[in-house]
Every structure is written in structure tokens, then in C-alpha cells.
Image 1 (cartoon, rainbow, N blue to C red):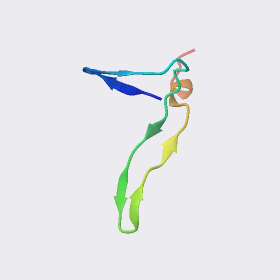
Image 2: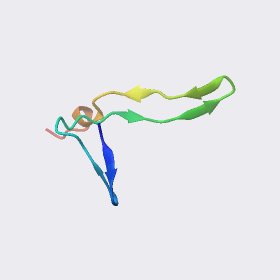
Image 3: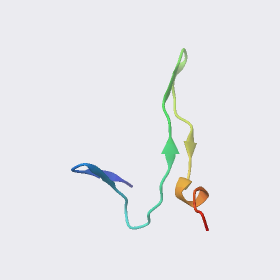
Image 4: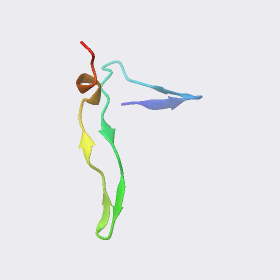
Length: 44
């Protein structure tokens, strides 16, 4: 889990990052999530 610290985001020891974006729809809030986003962005 990540947390705010002063002016930065601090990741946990596992360094797993999930990307989500909240979208307001007529039926309510929709939040699609891409799990382990950090693994998908790796340049290795």
C-alpha cells in the first residue's frame, strides 16, 4: 500500500503499484484498476 509523506508518495516494501481512475457515471462511481502497473511499465 502507498501513503502520502509530506510532498511525496511512499510505496510499501513490496513496491506494488496499482493504477486506478474514478469515473462518474449515471449508475454511480466506476473505478477500473490495472494491478501491478509497475511491472507493466518496466523498461527491462
